[in-house]
Length: 416
Image 1: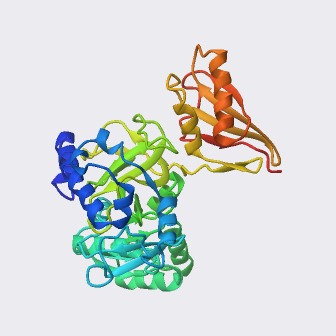
Image 2: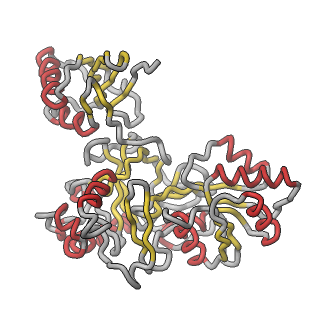
């Protein structure tokens, strides 16, 4: 029998959509008034009209690279770029930094990062001791998991990273129910325990993140009595999705609105098509409206076999930022979208492919379609030249011929 974190996990789709989009309009209005950054980004938007996925898709995407640029531009006046709605003090007890650096606030809400749902799905329950090996300094991962564990009613040992022998000793003596951290560090700890001849029978479950968990490593853990589950979260928006005992994709968190868009655009793609994850949160302290994570994934059809009814994604499938330098010029995913918008009758995928060797590049635009006139192909070549300032061959391919991997720019050059 499946144990659920709360009733939200089994609500019907219509009720979930009504709840999320019923709160979205107020969140957009709040972001416009309380966040200086979103005052600019959402200028002219009528918050009362943002009550559906279609309306949400009309808003601009703010990508992680843009967030960093805005923070850097306003660093002297506001280190967080005007995105946070709270100031230093009791309402912002901790501040973290991601590479860039991008600064992120932590508010006072219980389970501020909403990661308790993932911890619960991994099997942890009130009264358990969790050995938390995410970093507690600079990045928020350690705090994300510690606050979630406390929200469930667990105790936490803040192991952090490094000091492997001491980690083994603490596990042997404190007997935690399980581990939270990166999968690679869990393997290091278990290998060190074997080397030291120390048994860790209490450690039977794990929630891992920050790295891929390939099936071979999952099986390696299982052979040592540890059932490991994954979650996907970022410092900008908190928990996005989590794995369940069904191990069929990652179920979306109940506190975010997730879209998957064609890289370089804000245009949602069909279920199953790989695209960039764009997240909207209902967090009043750090309201992210259509935040482009830069990560690729795809939606899975149907519901989780455990009975959880929210949508699922395949998990992390690479990066959406495919910026490539060709003949001294940078080309971006957004430029491919700009080219194809000029040809609305070409509804299939398109991909710029760079071949040859560095300093001797060849550029080709592969476009899905049939019965495309020579005139249209010539116009495409002109459009590529106008948008990228580069010449490219146009290659027509059959509908569905391009791989479903989210790539709109493929660097296939030889670097030998």
